[in-house]
Length: 184
Image 1 (cartoon, rainbow, N blue to C red):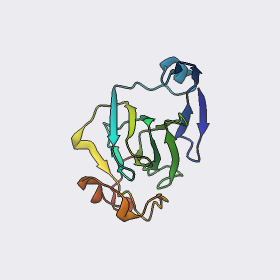
Image 2 (image 1 turned 120 degrees about the horizontal axis):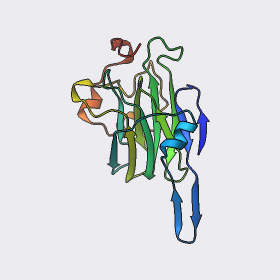
Image 3 (image 1 turned 60 degrees about the vertical axis):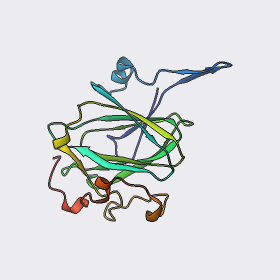
């Protein structure tokens, strides 16, 4: 597994090895021991799987507040997304900054988004399927978010706002400047 550092050191891109032959391929996408050897020692407790039928489906920017924060290991098994992680840790030198990465079935890259970040993605292809592991169970009372197109965050989304499909919840998330301190 290749570990690629990003501009925000706690967010990492992981590229598992793929072994292919005339039958197709085999890839070990998660191995607790290999991750620990790479300095990533997390206890994943739940897997989630989403399908977005159209291009331009936005999911996020979401987080779970303490004590139910979640580390996420995100991968795409069909299609592609522009994945975004926004630092919500008030004491961090990168507070309010974000990273973006294209994650796709073709590039076989995964993104590790730690606790303390809002996370989201927008689909770049129809019928995109995303699978992600999390380190804590879903806690609806601790479910939060940040407005996906907050100008203070400044994500360069690849779609015009009118072409983005959002849930009702994601249309009304607060801006970063209006969030209380959630993560120190």
